[in-house]
Amino acid sequence: MNLIFLGPPGAGKGTHAVRLSQQLGIPQISTGDMLRSHVREQTDLGIEAKKYMDAGELVPDDVIIGMVKMRLQDADCKNGYIFDGFPRTVAQAEALDAFADIDAVLNLIVSDEVIIDRLSGRRVCPQCNGTFHLRYLENKELCPVCGNKLVQRKDDLPETVLNRLDVYRRQTQPLIAYYDQKGLLRNADGEGSVDDNYNGVLQALDIQ
Image (cartoon, rainbow, N blue to C red; front, top):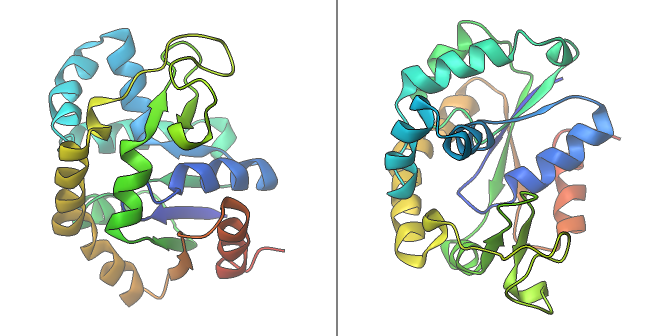
């Protein structure tokens, strides 16, 4: 099953994609994770990408498309995959059509207010790559998994979140109509509890 997860930043795409990938035994492919890995390793791609990511802007299409095309050639994609937050523009979707057959596109629906609360309270651990929300942390400073100091990503700062939402509306939201016209779009609520939302994802995709 070849899937795409759509939705604004902070909608829960990554959370549900990881869970579904484990349930179905297929990889979750996050271009954001790929790019952040390059940033950590300070590759040429990472240094260039960081300029865009820190400003909440999109990394140029040719970089992303080449990376994705190579990823789909890996053996673990043979039985399916889940794109988490890709494609982000209609141009990327059209490029993807040339080398991938998508079975369904899940669109998570979440209000701006919920998104801003989620992302501005998000903290990450640079050591173990864990992601947490201040609301659920007893110690707001340290990673509950490895004890390393938690940090707030620049693209989770409130002013950057607002810019990311604006970028999403301008460049990514048109994908909803694009995939709806193809008959691939499935909608699910992203504002409830994690478990309720995940059950909604399964229902939308008709997965038992």
